[in-house]
Length: 226
Image 1 (cartoon, rainbow, N blue to C red):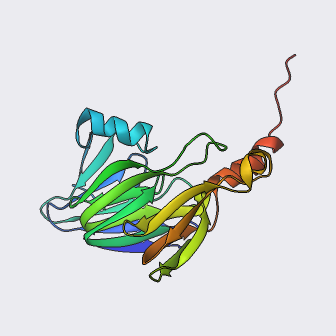
Image 2 (image 1 turned 90 degrees about the horizontal axis):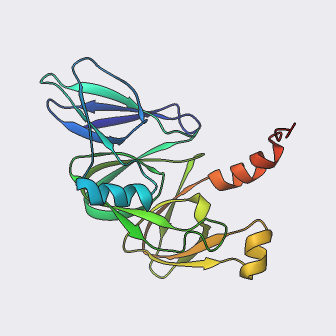
Image 3 (image 1 turned 120 degrees about the vertical axis):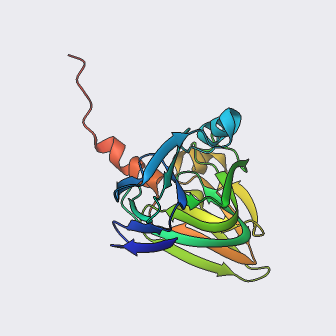
């Protein structure tokens, strides 16, 4: 599998070249186009209960698309829903925790599972609902805005707004907490943050979907009751 990221960082597209009979698993709606002969199969990944868990807790699609190349190989174009970047993360018997909505695609050697790691609704509905992605292969992640990489040293702590978190290596320690107490959390424009402690890689996104919606929704004209 060869991955080329085009048009980054604002409107990135991933061009994935598959070897003969090689497969790629992708979220529904991520496919932009594909070459002739590539077969598409849509199914629940890991059975009903695991698919339901990924959908309800992880915020991902209930169904996953599997693209399989023909005997001569093939090509697929993938893009995220929001304007932003695509990040290729090769895994070698490793595990990353991926923020809900950032998983876009993976090779067959990557297993995804849901990991509950924070309160989702107590503080403005912005919690940490993570997908646990493990194994060996290629993981494609998407972001709203550009990707910013951090490589934390052993014992180094960095505090991140949960709306800007994309992924981090499983061995990175984390603690989810509210900012400034209940009153400022609910009414002060802030929500939850996570304290990340190294060593390990952390991926952030430069924009927050929640912050954008907070700005946009009050500007939408309300329909008159008449």
